[in-house]
Image 1 (cartoon, rainbow, N blue to C red):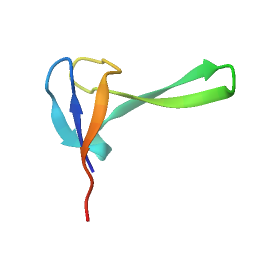
Image 2: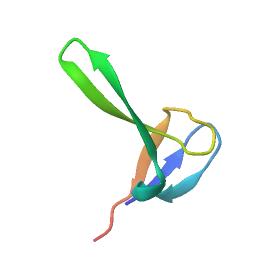
Image 3: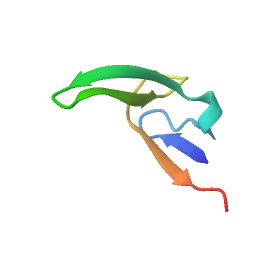
Amino acid sequence: MMYQCKDCNWLGPEEELDWDEVETCMGFDKVDICPKCFSMNVVLIKEEE
């Protein structure tokens, strides 16, 4: 799977993503973080077939 950061346009595979756990009202949730600018504005752009 390929991901892209909407803030710095970083593009890379899921294995390169950083992540953090944030507490929500439903418990803890894993959030993907851009390895270049540390933004949480990362989106999936292509799934492998």
